[in-house]
Image 1: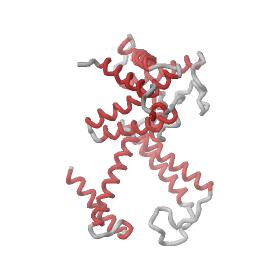
Image 2: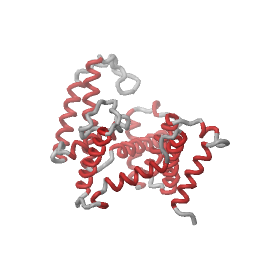
Image 3: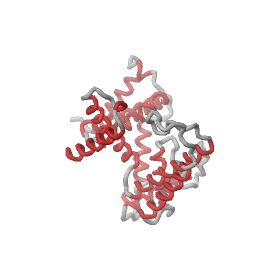
Image 4: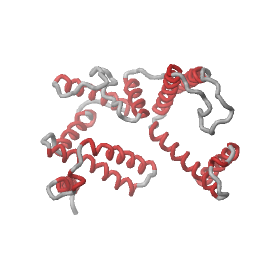
Length: 300
């Protein structure tokens, strides 16, 4: 039976063959930029398999995600930038260096201690890279000394908020307890309501049924204030998730799927009478929604 190392080397060799002379035309014409969307897609498919607890599918999706790493490393080697060996070497060194409580004599009794050490080590690594000229100036003009430096603005906004607030919390900038967060949540809801009260009255009593329909255009200043208040509300909700050790992206993704399941069940019920949701009254839709919820609870 092949060892793990042999299997990994086989995957590296297959990737090189696909990109080499006589290989796959599609694989050979790919670039770092053209592969980026697939990397994002494969990442979300891994998350979906985990959410579904589909271990067979997760095995496949993790392989697809690993393929992305091999693809980038192979392209980099072709351009004499780095190789998969460099990637593995950096990874191994980073794991050892950032776990001095395992591979050294640093004490870390709790996961909180580990996280504090981790952030301190990352900050020190970043400072060294900047001093050695190996770090690029971030587009956001982050100060390299900031505890928030290095949090990418390209990641999903909920994840970015979670990372930013976590970094701040590690240096003591945090709510003292969960109750304080709920008080802040109520404060933000009230501030949003105050801005909503400034909205012009609808031009008609009945619109298309779509939220916001019938309203005249909102002036840019009010729109910006509304956007700011909604953003503040999201940020507090992300912090509540963080306080409860929950992933806000995962929580919202599961709610999206729950909404989809229930709405499609409603569509099925209406389809039995050759109707669509737009043909039903809001009261009937609400009744069907409650039935969908009860059915989900009953089925477990």
